[in-house]
Length: 480
Image 1 (cartoon, rainbow, N blue to C red):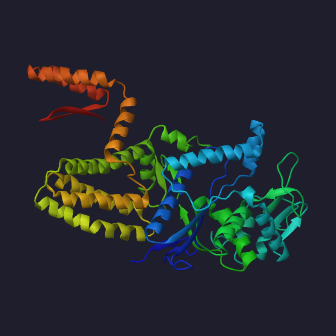
Image 2: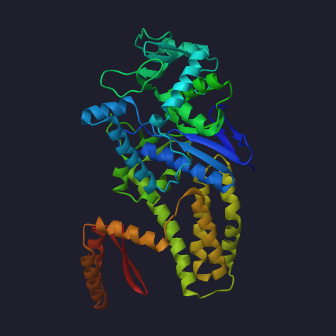
Image 3: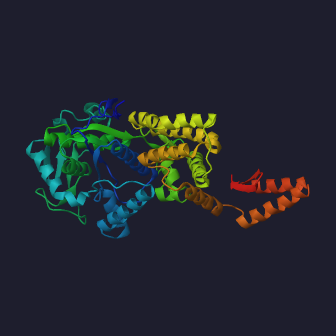
């Protein structure tokens, strides 16, 4: 089955056929760098990193462009509030963004352009739109004529007349039409600015993406991505100004990821349910957050909650424990002849690659792909003690191939499990030394057949979220 993607422009799944065979040009809207990134940013960037990885795994030569918006009202306001130059704010939060994305195991895009480094290209594009009659200067501002572009709102499926009738738009005497949008903004006193044919000013938000995407990828892109919140007005305006300037289709496939909800409510600063990536990573391992974000289909909304993060943590731990078990068997070197259990594992191992590709070729369905991995893990756990070493080695390699393709399970299994144990023990209410002392006391109590004291110790530790695991080899413990 060929790769099929859901195209927001057509509202349907389509076979993915690059404009130039074997090559893909992908542009994804980056962040406005005025503050720390939140988990909505994490989702968008993890999603398109996954898509980038998968396209490369299919043998495509991908040029991936993700920009930084480093001049904007929010940046200027933050700079004025902090009493520093605007670029001190933008550079600080570019650095913070890069740190967050590195922790989430994102591959670097091919290009990461900044808006302020492309002012000449932006000015040239604005002038081209003026020359073609799609834009007009009004004082030191320049606006795009939305009613001049025939295809306006084709991405969001809206109607210009209905929007104008239903909108609460402040009267702006500078505009010919209330819905016209700014391509160039004249500088206000004290604001940073660049010289232009229309006076001192700076680019509007939408025009920068058109200028940078076409510079690196040409007039027509294979893929343009971003969150659903960008469909209108940002991506709609990008289409209008880009196609008006070039006379060509701007993007072949529009891909948009779903929203992040917090405990079933939309994330919002006003609701007080707004979490930065850094805040989340203080409580959860970065691999867990990435795994959680890929556990749902990228177009679906995803509900961020402690319960769902903990379930993702347990799911990832199951995979790592199965892989650690394989590592232990391989290190021990004791082989086994094929058994009924290993025959089932052999079957699952032989089909996992095809099942994974089938899921991913269906619009990058990571939820289904990870479901196939868990199916394999269940077979591993049943067959691990009695499987041939050669089979276990192949199983490990298949899982590693899948993991690398979407960017999960990036650690050595034993090291990940130890890291998680260290994280959990650091959060415990009871020191490890006290746990070990109580386990030793319990062993003596059981030896003396004092089962009342043995049960008391078990219950005491359980109250502290410590679960005891008895076996023929002795008693171990884990955090509940």
